[in-house]
Image 1 (cartoon, helix red, strand yellow):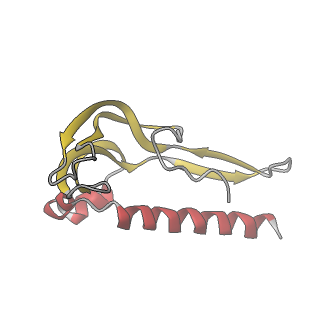
Image 2 (cartoon, rainbow, N blue to C red):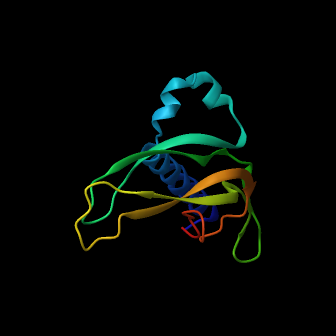
Length: 139
């Protein structure tokens, strides 16, 4: 496989992963913001995000919290030595968080109703850490 084809496939996989992540993480609050502003936004910011918290044996609870959102500078260039590519890949990731615990409704008697989730306090473009972020590490 040629280096150019490998690089094209890698970019395609990254683009598809971004689209999948984008479609899965669409917070309700984004519909209230102008789409033009979001398309032009470059950087990393704390944004309001709504999700359904649930666990087996309990009812669900809609939670609105703050999460990291954005696009960060990324580039790749081919090189002659293995691994044949030099990359600079940064993601919008959590820099500072606090944990919040809520009680889920209608839990069965043997189920702990406590549900803990992170709230973003500060987000930055940085190296993808698998401890806080879903990372694509290889293609």
